[in-house]
Image (cartoon, rainbow, N blue to C red; front, top):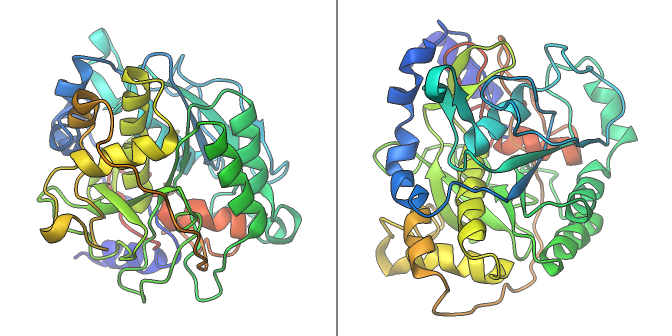
Length: 381
C-alpha cells in the first residue's frame, strides 16, 4: 500500500468515503475499469430495463447536475443544510456526484462511450443535500444547526417522487446511537412503498460498531466486496447486512471532470440502490419488504447457510431478481436498536476528514466512497 493510500485509509475510519489524489484516469479507459458492472451482470438486467421511470433520491452532499455523465438525469432537489460550500465550489458535491454516477451515470461523448456508466443509466436522480463534505469550512457549524437534516431529507424525498432512497452515509462511531426521528422517517418512507438502502459501515477494522441508518428496521444494508467477491477488510460485519456489492477500486466521477477509484460501503450502497431501481422498474408493484427479500433470495455467491454478517445473503444480482419477480418467503424485520451512522466525505484532492461529526452528516461520510484524482480509497467505516 502506498503512503498516499495509507493516509487515505486512516482518514476513512469514521465513515466510508475517501479520496486519493492520483493521475486522472483517461476517459476512454473508464469502461474497461468498471469491473462492477460485469460482476453484477447488468447486461442481463438491461435486457429488461435500464431503470427508466424510476427516481432515486440521493441524500448526500450535493450532486453536480452539469456533469456530462449525469446531464439530463438530475431533477430539481432540496438543500436542507442552507450554508457551507455553494454550487460549483470544490467542497460542495464530490461525494454526491460520485454516488449518483454509480447509480445513474450514462457516460458522454459519441454514443455515450466515454465516462462512467451507472447500473441504472436511465433512472433519474433526486438530490437532497443533508450533509457537508468533510473539507467544507463550515462543517463544525453543521453539527449543531442541522442535526435533523437526514430525517427531514428522508421525509422530503418520500413526499417528492422518490422510488428508491439511497443513503451512502452513516454513523458508526463509539458514540453512535439510534435517533428516533431518523427511525421514524425511515418507517415513513417504507410505509409509502419506498425501499431505503444504506451503507453497512466502514468499521470492519475499527471494532465493527453498529451503524445507523443501516441498522434501522427495514433498511437494505450493503456491505462491500472486491472484484474477487471477498469482503473488503473495512466493511462492517453486523447482523443487519442484507447483501454485498462492489466497494473496492470502483471508478467514480467527480465535478472536476476527472475520474477516480474509490472504496467504501458508500459505493456498495449506491450499486444496491441502482439494482433496486432496476427491480422496481421491472416489478413496480413489489413492496419494500418484498424487494429486500427478493434480493436476498437471488443473491450470487451466497455464504454457507445462506447468509453471514460479512456479506449478508451474498452479491446483489439484479438480473436474477428481475427474472424471479417475487420473493418466495416473506420475513419481517424485528425492531432493534443500535448506535451510530456515517461513512466518508467524498472525493477531494486531500485525504477525507472524519465525518462522524454530524449525526446526519456522518451517514454520508461513513459509507461514502469517492475519489477526486484518479484513485479513491476507503476512509471511513
